Amino acid sequence: MSDAKSPEAAAQAATPPASPSQEVAMPARAGHPAGLEGEVLRPRRSRKRLILPLVALAALGAGGYYGYGYYTTGRFIVSTDDAYVKADVTTLAAKVPGYIAEVAEPNSHVRAGDVVARIDDGDYRLAVEAARGKLATQQATVERYSRQIEAQQATLAQARAQLTAAEADAARAEADFQRATQLAAAEYGSKQRLDAARAERDRLQAGVEAARAAIATAQANIEVTRAQQEEARGALAELRTALARAERDLSFTVVTAPVDGVIGNRAAERGNYAQAGARLAALVPLHAVYVEANFKETQLARLKPGQAVDIDVDALPGHTIHGRVESFAPGSGSVFSLLPPENATGNFTKIVQRVPVRISIQSPVDEGALRPGLSVVAQVRTADPVSASKELAAR
Image (cartoon, rainbow, N blue to C red; front, side, top):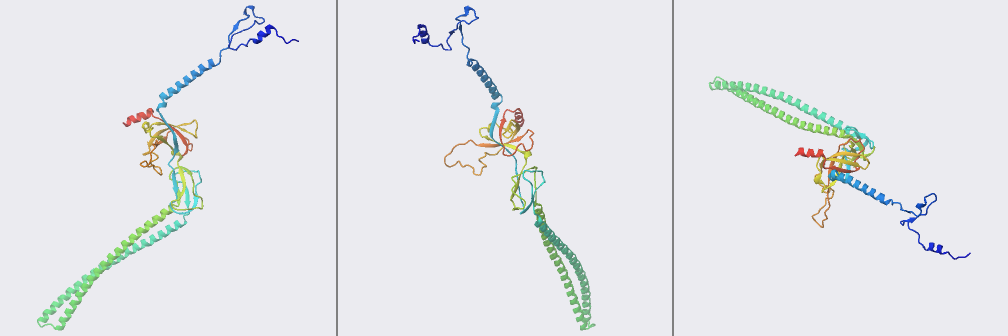
């Protein structure tokens, strides 16, 4: 067989193939009219020419939607993700030392007045009984002084009566002495009788002085007894205070919950010895949680109390909680830190400070859904009409 090619085959091999974008002359197919033989067909339109306009329209619509949202709402939103759920946690501590006899279970719900912990109260009950005994003894001492004063007042009355009798006898003796003196001067009476009358007068005068001294003694004894009674009353008051303190210490052996809440961070176990002031547990009022958002100082100018806040909790995805701005901290967080910054020395780098803002929860939320420490995103609506009306009323 010969390898030589015909002139038609060589020409066909030298002709390059047609590209898809070039017009191609198709031969007539069987069944088609002969007039369509050699007709030129156009290629299909590319999909990109259809998709690009659709994408542009979608982008334009989305931009318009978000632009309208920003113009009407977004530009009035002040937000921060430096926000957390908080609560006024109460630290329960032992007021008196002793062994723990009973303690509430961790994470248990308690109400105000419920017993959280009990300390062994044996020693404190004995102290109360001892204080009561001393108080009763001292009370008896005060009563004894009262009876002594009454007896001494009777003695004083007796001394006054004796003084009256002594003065009467002394007056009679003085009269007898005067008569005896006159008789002796007239030589009608003996000298012996005059001496006897003089001695009787002097004796009775001495009795008057003795009666007066007895009155003074009785009065002094009454004053001394009254002073002793006042001293005993002072000691009685001290013993009453000691009894009140012993009873108070006894009451401190029962640690109760001051508010409703949940027991957390329990540090005491049954049988442990608790020192005075030792922390026993923490009481978290889950029904009174709030949000503390740390806004930048550049955002504070637009924030005012009463403005509505949308709160997104990381632990509750898709659930927005409503709140209101309640108050502002009196200083930035760095002011109340353990080691406040000192910018008066060395190099200085300005850092935007943050101020804690307290936000109250307005939406009804199941107790326990919000727990202290959870992260949230707070968005304050500065154009809230309710806030604007409140501000106008305040002005």
